[in-house]
Image 1 (tube, protein in one colour):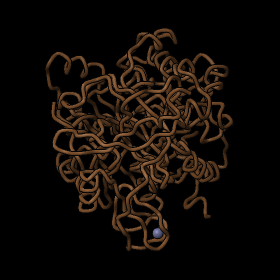
Image 2: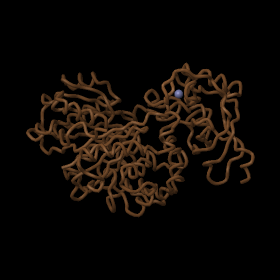
Image 3: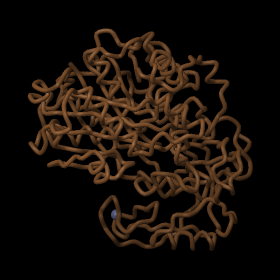
Length: 388
Length: 135
Ligand SMILES: [Zn+2]
């Protein structure tokens, strides 16, 4: 297998932007509607341009998130471009890298906005989101099986028995990320919790507790990614992308085969080979991890899948070694989807950039040189390594 | 809140008809004999598009289970269980365990198919195999 289709550090992040998640969340909870998805996207884009210190005219590529229409975003922002597309957070970064590598664009704006909270979007029940892309989200509804949380609960139950992980060990995820959020002024949930708090919290879909579930809030995120040499010329603090990788498990997806038999591990192992080979780095070189965490279970799956611990030892690793800013290998240093903001992987990208820049304030990981981002949504594994 | 609904693609209709007759059938590849679930037009193993609707044995084992403590559908007040069953024929189906529930872990418990009337449809459910209920 040809592992790396492009050289490391071909593209760099030169700008990041976000909306004010806690302020908007407070307004939405008070019954107001600060923006729709386009307004959040626009605000994040303006912030990312300012952070990069470039002008709109420098942008020649545009990729938008799944919740907004590509043309309308371009129209609103006045962006006529020579390359464009639509993708989720992780694939947006991969596609921007590929467009730059292919010479199709030099400076790509990646823009996401989502009014899911104020628009009362449902991720379970008769109008569950995502069914048109993932049949498993809706196919088992006649048996009452709905919500992405339930898919992970079913996976968690088997994983806990097969691989040996207790509820108290899984609690380490929610506890560690809440600690990170307590040091992050842009996190929504900042009150620290303990393993005991976790165990005392209600089940939503047993064995998963309330604290295993992501938040639902409004907001936007944007990144500017530029060709590496151009990034050095125009960027304030470019953060090169050292590696990217992807592997999709599609066979048996609706009958939950990849979830319930191998817990997505073959996909993560394949991606690990690609991304670490491209970056000429390994798990021991990573100073922090950002892991897509719609549910806490993603964290032990990634720790095992990418070789941060042995298969069957993620529970022990989290309990004994630690995955927090206080000890061990810091995971989701901004609080992630569980405690910071549910920006569907987009907040993880800008947190990785901040950590590598050394601009993460109270939650800064000391001497943070490399950050590994991983996601495994519905068995589609993606990795990105950001570094100095 | 609304009731739960079926996905009824062209290939799902014969499946639901078979459950209505309480003889659940799945498409079985005419070439390599692999069963398809959900039903579909082609074999993911050998790419053959030929198949016959074949009644399943109804035997299986529980792969995993959950208990819902939140209501999402009008017709499913909480709490209720959902199980994943590995059918003897190979595929995994998502269903409900009816009747007696096991003590301790449900995983690897042998189950057999039964049918229940739900709203305007007949659908599969599973019950513990008799020999296992007291073990
Ligand atoms: Zn076949």
